[in-house]
Image 1 (cartoon, rainbow, N blue to C red):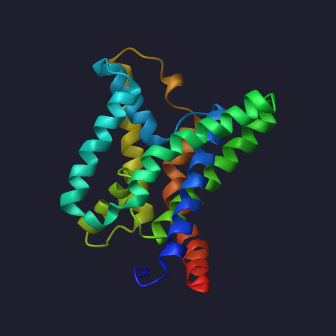
Image 2: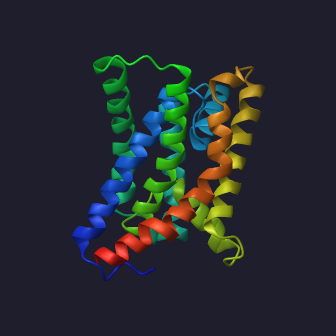
Amino acid sequence: MDTSESPLSLRMGMMVLGIFLIGVCVGSFRLSAFGVDAFTCMNLGISGFVGLSFGTWQLMVNAVLLVIIFFRKRSCIGPGTIVNMVGVGYMADFICWMVQDVAKLEMTLPLRLVALALGMVLAGLGVAFYMVADLGIAPYDAVGVLIEEGTGGALHYDRARVISDVTAVLIGVVFCLLAGGELGLIIGVGTLLNALLNGPLIQFFKDHVAAPLFHKLS
């Protein structure tokens, strides 16, 4: 769906909404304590192996991916790229602060399961919204796009995303084991669900929610 001719205000609104939902998703995953997302899993594993802080290593990986995307798929870079890289972490921190410090909510097992389910749904919905806005996406989200284009469209984004997510988890696990780290700190049932289901959920919400809504509003 070509959105380049649609009103910029609508595209900006979709972008902000999508990134907001992603921030809530990340916060929900953290509150569930069932494991991190695939990209975080990889970066935690490698950063522990090379002896760098997680933040420093993730910044380096994002920078490398940005360079690759700049030369391979420059249209994936835009305001949404920057807003995502800067805003998602702070939004997740805010959600956790509201739940744990303001509401002082005890995360019992049922609430953790609700947080996990919410994180899974919002992960797919958020990425779908800000991809449809076509104002740039996060470097890691663009990996699936590169895989899709690299296969000539033989692999749609949903399958390409599963490949990138599963690969990221496997890399994180390998490096964590090489470093003698504790796997439970970087991987859990939430990580596995995210790796296997995030791509199909993004594609589903993009085709059946985000794109139809965008078309209707524009």
